[in-house]
Length: 193
Image 1 (cartoon, helix red, strand yellow):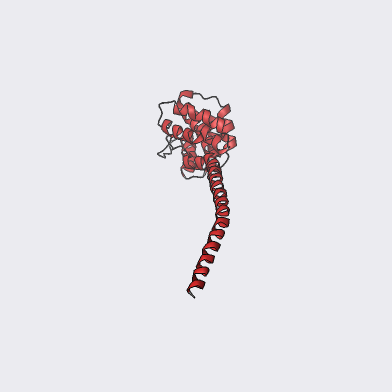
Image 2 (image 1 turned 90 degrees about the vertical axis):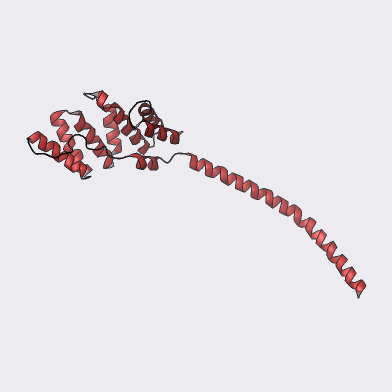
């Protein structure tokens, strides 16, 4: 009986060693394949996440420009009433209507602020391409007052249109300025690189 037990133990040890030698190379190849799969997956995730999310950048940074022209509503003259009405619509976030009001105001007055707010209203209402085209082709009466802020909104507009090169060009001009938006433009440029 003792001898049979010893023979059985020896048989089991031999069988175990044989099965281990057969499983070990298979396990080795599976480990290598799994390692390569993990490396390729990490590489693909990096590549997919490294391209900027234009919609997210636009959404996180686009805010309609604050009403700095007519923040207090007064009704004194017809022109003042037109201005107040346009800004009331703008402040109420009725951008489709404010775009029309600012366009009419610009047509009658040729004032830069009316053109500027007209295009910001267009962007806020989803007409980004129209606003970008208008900003690009406009000759400002007082360019020094509108160049940097227009470049900011052009950069945002080009982000929305997924034109990275044009967005970078405009944000670079803003970043090189001494205006408050310079740091925000630098942050966006870092994300676009």
